[in-house]
Image (cartoon, rainbow, N blue to C red):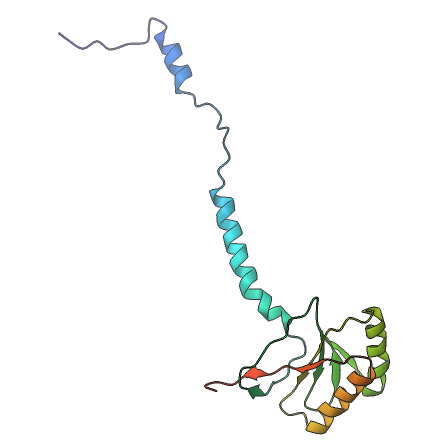
Length: 153
């Protein structure tokens, strides 16, 4: 009626030591990888809208309207307050704007894609109309103006 303890003298200790060793783990834990992927997804979702802004200009506000969707990367022309024009982020003198736009129009092979015009709030109506006239002369027929949505309007 007593307890017996295995002292390990009979060879049972060797087997006990072998069992104490752990076999190598053959499974891959995907939880840390999923965590990293979710963090990267959130970072890219936050950063993506910030990458679309080119030339820093202050857009005028208007009431919310219909938005156009482009088939591929839209052509954006920006006009700063001093009248400087930019195709995407590249500055272009007004006298060279028509030639560059014709080259882009030929490269797109008649795509009826709109050109987006971002005019600074401080740019005059005349400056914006000069650029829009050159866009039309460059072969683009659909011109859309980009604005900010007014608060409370």
